Length: 274
Image 1: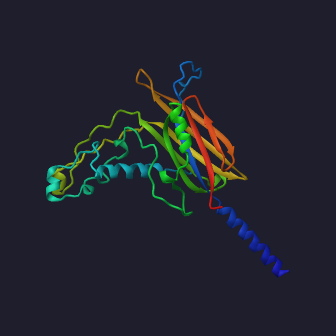
Image 2: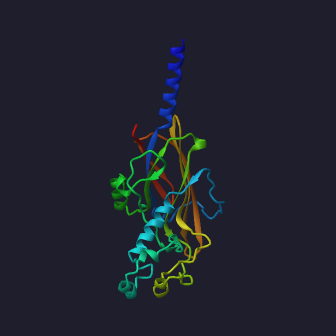
Image 3: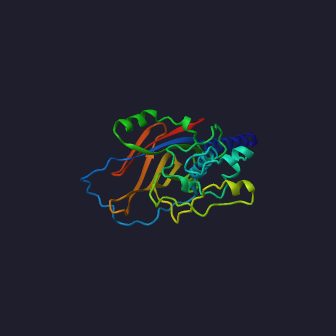
């Protein structure tokens, strides 16, 4: 009897561990629809901000790292290195510090945020662009004249709804007033005095074409709950937001299409190491 009881406990523990270790990777490709001149829907109704629980932002650190690397490499949107620096051997990495609002330096965010190549199951993480598989879908969008605004993916552990993470996704053009150069930043070092680097005044609110949250949870099946604002500037200069909110039960391995008058989304969830 004792042997059977121990065997039962071990089986339950193994089953629980196996369930907890169900990992997946998801790939998401979001694009703008072509303007529809006879669209009947009215998007003038103001909506409150999108709310989500247990949120996680993987994109911002990636966007910041890419912009900082651009700064170090002398990207034109940052002040270029002066001749004096090259003479005295100053490191540009000392000038591209944390005082710069790197997100504000973008007019348009990168289509695919960069990330290191990983193959582990330690924590939710972004896929490297080389790990994305929607090559055919991107070609099809190009043939149809549709513009992608975000193509990314991440690996995550399947969780029940209450424990699942809502990932913040945003991309496209910066629709606010173009960032204005703030007072030139100087550090106490001689190098910074002779070669200031342009900083950007932080915007009160950074408004991008796409902004929202994407949630996946596991309950026998996989469920996608996504909510975004797609924003565009009207001819009178005002911003108009179209709310995209869709919920769908999906099967891993299948490619799913989400349609909306202003934007479209292609999603595939793939099993990872199981």
